[in-house]
Length: 325
Image 1 (cartoon, helix red, strand yellow):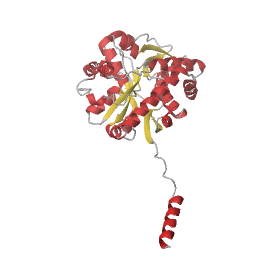
Image 2 (tube, one colour):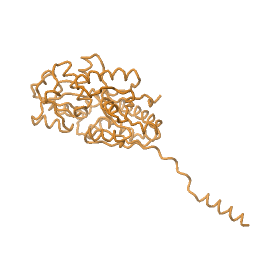
Image 3 (cartoon, rainbow, N blue to C red):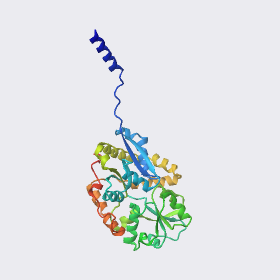
Image 4 (cartoon, rainbow, N blue to C red):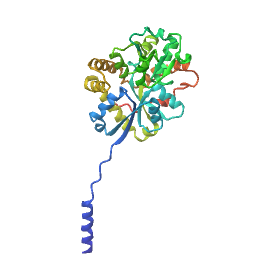
C-alpha cells in the first residue's frame, strides 16, 4: 500500500509540474547612429518579424554620437553595430576584438553640401574654406574626403585647420549661420537638406573617388565582437539572412523609406529622392576578393592621415564565416 501511495503522489507531482518552457531566442543588441539610414532595414526586420523567423530577437538602439556608438561596439554593449570599415579595422589593430561581417553601403549619399547661394561650385573651391564633417577626425567619411582633396585637388583641410567636426544634426544650422562654408553629410540628413531647396551638392565623395581612382568605395559595414561570434555563430548567420531579406524588401517596397522620410520631416519629393539614393547605396556582395579590393584604400588613407592610421589592416578585422549560403 505504501508503494502504491508513493507512486500515486509521484505521478501527481509530475502531472502538476509545468512543462519546460521553450528555449528563449538569443537577443542581438544592434547599435546604430541616430538618424541613420541603416535604421530603415533594421526596422523592417522588426516589423516583419524576420528576427523571429530566423530564431533570434533583435533589440535596436540608436546613439546620438559616433563616439557613443563606437564605445558601445568596442565595449561589447552591442553584439552587432554599424560603422565605417576603416574605424573597425583601426579598432582591431589597437587590440579591440571587433570584425566586420557584412557590407551595408557604398557611400552614395556622402555629399559635400553648401548653401544654395554660396559661390562655391566645386571641390576645388573648398580650399581655405571651413568644412564641417559629421564623421569625426578618423571616421571613414572624413578619411575619404581628405584622401580625395589631398590626392586629387592638392589640398588637405585636415592639415590646414579648415576641417571641423560637429553632430550631424547641427551641420546645416552652422552653414545657415555662416559658421561653416560647407559640410559633409549622409542620408537622410543630406537628402532632407537637398530637398529643402536651401542647400546643394558640390561633390559626392563615393562618385568622385570612383571617377578619380577607377575603384569603387565601401563605406559602412556591420561588425560584431569575437566573444559573441564564438558563442553565437549560428545567430550571426541568421542575422545576415534577416538583413538581406530586409534589404530585398526595401528595394521593392516604398513604404519603409516613405515612413522613415516622414519621421524625419521630409515631404513626398524628399521621400522620392531618399528612395533613389538608399537603393543605390546597398551592397550585398561579401567575399574575400571583394574585401581585398576595397581594403586597398588603406594605403591611400595612411599616406594622407599619417603614421599610426591603419598601419596594418588585420585580416581578422573581416570575416566571411557568417555569410548566409
